[in-house]
Image (cartoon, rainbow, N blue to C red):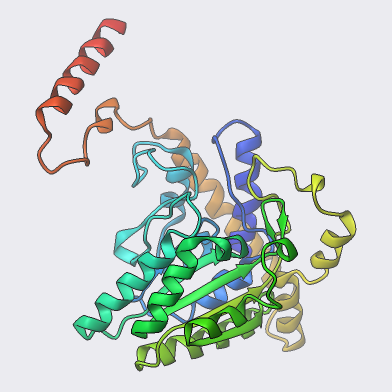
Length: 326
């Protein structure tokens, strides 16, 4: 959680300094990410929205991979083609995110159904925000999962704001979790700022799904303490008092105090984890900034197995234009 928090701070700084073009943070939502991801096995599939950087890191993505994607350099797995934070890492079953809201939900259901048909003891976990529950894909995915009892975990990070739309303008239901009843399966509400509660709730849902018990909708009640993205100014739509109230429930502060009371964490541990995580981030930034941009020719690769004639023609024209400009 500390690594994710420090990366969040540095990511926004990098954007403000003009070193990367865009950034989406997850300040305040670290417990939802890390607690839920710990309940998964390596063979399970993750379908993220765009705040699940902690899930990717926990499952094995490296900080250099993440930073290369932020900078969109030649080592970026997406070759600079995706918006910052929309990355995928195939070896860890972390599916590439997408900017349109909620599209990952039916995809996760489809992957879970495929696993069920093949007899694989695999679950698919889809992350999304409260705003996604107003999208068609949310309803289609939930209904399909309920009918076919797919091993899908729907994890809604209810951070109270879909950009500038508050949760009370998002739904007339008392909770998001209760929406699962309409689709014939269980919905659970959990304190999203309590990492242990998040882990236990997700673990139970994963175990049930793996044993053939079908899907679960988990509503993690949390709060986005930072802006929606680097293009957002949250002071225009929410009060200082509301933010301060949720800052007192900071998931990292809560867990640190819990560990201190258990006498398994102290100031020395805190200093070490801060130093280690910041050093890891610094090293990744230094590496990513040295890597050049993707070659111009990569605009035409990875589209078709065999490049069709019209793309070959466009590639030659681009290469000729590039040669003339040099």
